[in-house]
Image (cartoon, rainbow, N blue to C red; front, side, top):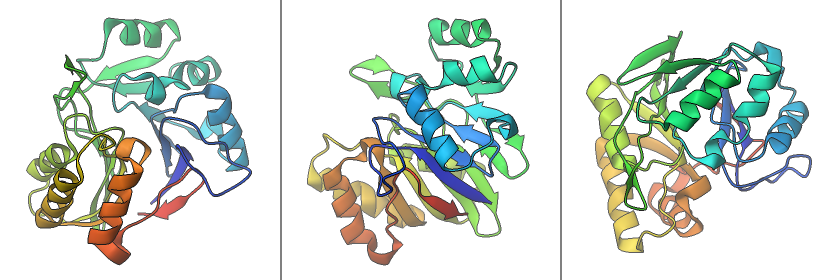
Length: 237
């Protein structure tokens, strides 16, 4: 199983565009989030040799513009794509999926969506004092369960604990994506990183809304088990 970062805030490849948001493609067929801008999403897909016709489903982590920005143009190209969302997403989001002829699938809890690929379903979170439900993507391999997050508004530790409820005796070799720690104090970030170590997260790849300081702290704590995540990178799961 492999994962390619299609969209992120940073890149080290001059052929790849970067922008606010996140998107990751699993095994060339399951798209997780769609970034901020459709044109940059499609540009990067072309540069990374992604065949849009091979995408079988889209999972949206949460209902924010920097994770749904490319979805509508994608649906214009690919009608009837299954779109996995949380029940707590806005009525506007759900209506727009239907208007763009997507097939909306709402997951309240754990759901297998393909062989080796599952979603947590809705995990309650908060953003600027308002309810912000979110879900994570889980990839099952011989190494254990790799977790991909969009922004972790429920809290990255809470999201991992949710995964552990589904897979209590399974290793978590890697967690990557947005950890939403940009405005978090260093001491709190250290506690979060320590908690992830205690839970058994073997490697981490904080990106997008994680923030530079959090990346540096996780790199310090995790050492060689820290993975830099940028648009254009590919990972073997």
